[in-house]
Image (cartoon, rainbow, N blue to C red; front, side):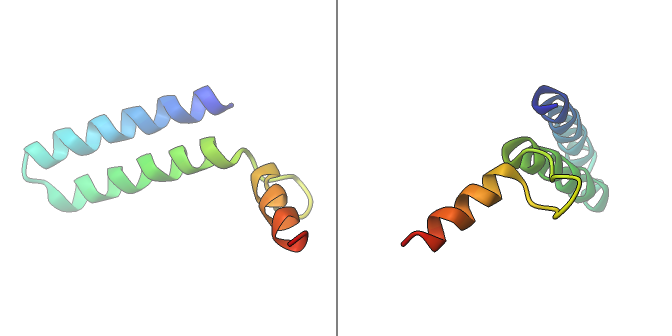
Length: 67
């Protein structure tokens, strides 16, 4: 799933650059947002079906509680 998300992030980023070069700034910003969204989920992993927390978030919360 990580590779899938990163592939989409790259495609959206490529689109954002192309749109920017065409001076279509609003559309470019939208594609950049989607690129960052896909990259974020690739980094955080998928949210769990119940509870909505990702493994990365669970680890961060655990480390915060243990201090």
